[in-house]
Image 1 (tube, rainbow, N blue to C red):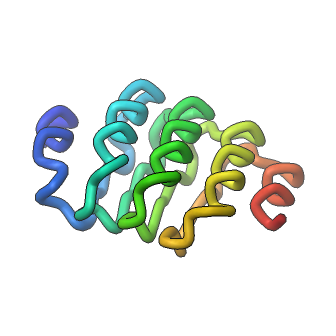
Image 2: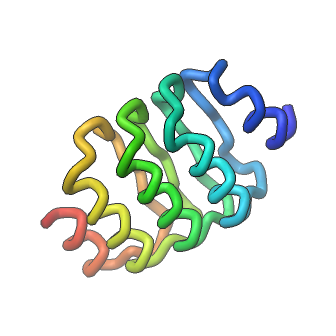
Length: 117
């Protein structure tokens, strides 16, 4: 199914596997906008794409209002400390996300510390 079709039918998914689809930061921003008020997607796998910090920040913004998503996999997406700090800030108020996978990114010690604080 094309990415556009996935966006159009987002309400029909509880688990969304978009790993290794060549998604960009712009694609992620589109998805994040659709997820803001989504009440069905609980598990989202975006691993092995090119989301970068911009996509990660869009997801962090979405998680401020989305209380349905419980698992987010953004491994190997070119995310750095900047994106990690945006997520860390959001996770201070979001209690629904219980599983976050970030391996294979460049978050370093500073990003890990931000998440731990």
